[in-house]
Length: 275
Image (tube, rainbow, N blue to C red; front, side, top):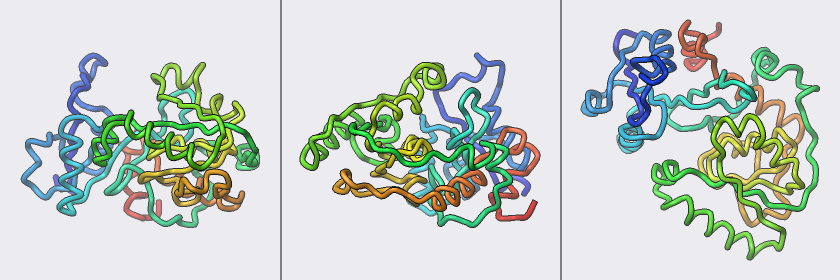
């Protein structure tokens, strides 16, 4: 690949505090690709394929510019599942923040590595009373030109109240130490939830995996099998077990460990090559 792929760091995170001089995940991915470490300022006027992690500073500018010009990029972020205790899996998506390509029929090799046996993972869908709203961050809203997260949340609540009188609960995203201990999304979903509503959060996929319907109102991997129309909130689409199985197998080929980035496995899978 030479230097046909370049990574740009998200401004605002001080990796030096963690003993690094550059984003270690981007560095690992570049090792497996054969690309170069760079910045948005250095790459803005080139046509190099970019690797972007995070939504701060130059990352937002880069993504918007790529969308406007058709310039290719790969976005690296937290994986869809398998990170209950440690952030082991990282999703890598081509020209988007989440994988929204048609579901590819995959084997279950990677699913078993990431989650275990499907029969032990799958949770049948259950009924509940509450609507759980998981608002996006202001960074996400800015990227998609949707105003503030607060305004989005207020608008969604107003729309939901026109459709149903179900109780509504808002779940702001906790800090990571809380998300994996005493304020997990799984605990929130188990608390009598009828349906989760979000914009582009991976909480939609997490809800489906917990046996709860989800409504996604923005670009979201879960939109492949879940509800996307708020008007259907009383009777949202519920995927079958076969649909869930195909979906999760598909996503297991869209997230990778740091080692898989470094040894080229991630790049081979992303390029559709047999490994």
